[in-house]
Image (cartoon, rainbow, N blue to C red; front, side, top):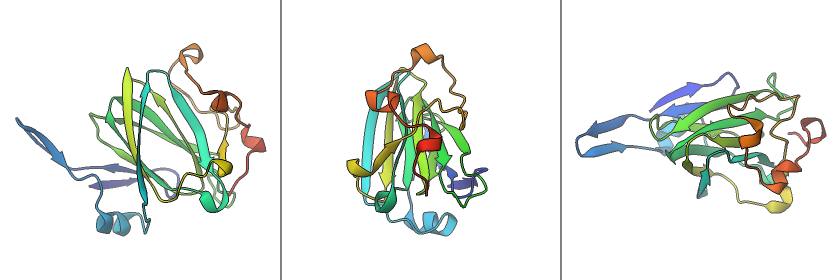
Length: 181
């Protein structure tokens, strides 16, 4: 696998080596020793999967305190823009974001460490996401920051009227009112 450090320290794009022929393809999606050597020790404890349709925007979500999560995300089917926002007050990139397109074609993965808000926008008819997390889901610790927060300034590539949001995401807090790490 090819490990690519993004412009925000700790956030990585991982490109697998794909072996393809007339029968289909094979690739390794996670190899603990290689991951530790390139990124560091993360003990993933759970795998999740979600399916969404075009225009669904989920996020910007994170869990605070002891329930913070690192995530390793990838798209199995479809195409999405995936975003990580740095919430680490000691970081020189605090409040900045990095985004990457994940798709079934590019097979990229996106590693988001603890201390970040995470969100994605579906760009294809449907998308199936799978992701590893290193901590349990704790609804009492979950926070959502507005996807359209002007301080962060994420450039979502579809029109506002095409977005499909949950009520929770519509009522999310502004960046200035969020809790940081």
